[in-house]
Picture 1 (cartoon, rainbow, N blue to C red):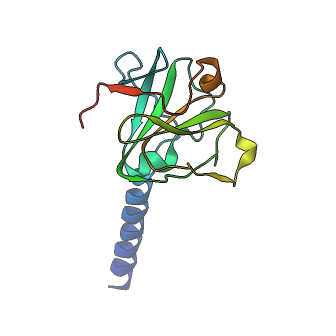
Picture 2 (cartoon, rainbow, N blue to C red):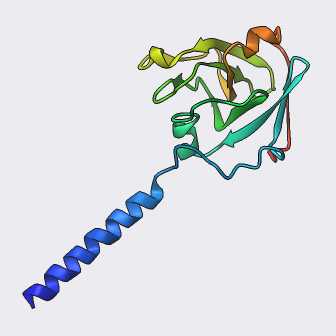
Length: 157
């Protein structure tokens, strides 16, 4: 009877561990179809974006990746309008962080956020519904400015 109880406890521990391991998000999503991604249009250019619209995806963001392809980014889609803060935890390359209002206008920017800035956090000066992360230098090289209109194609709202 004692041995039977020990076996049940061991099996229970393994089940709990298996559940916890399957809930972890991968560091890199290698199964992304890079050709059929939604697109964000801003300042006369188009960026193909991966969407982060769940808490787990938003927490992970671009962390752990080695780089970001030219013309690609990550679009964070939040359920609520707020001052969404960002940090560079586990990032390996610098990025521009662009906050976008629910009316699809650029409301704030953090240019060249570097991995070394962690644990600092970046907060917008206005509330936003979307946040776009792109390669560092994107904002300046495309001559974007606050108030510029943004269009998001390929998403259902």
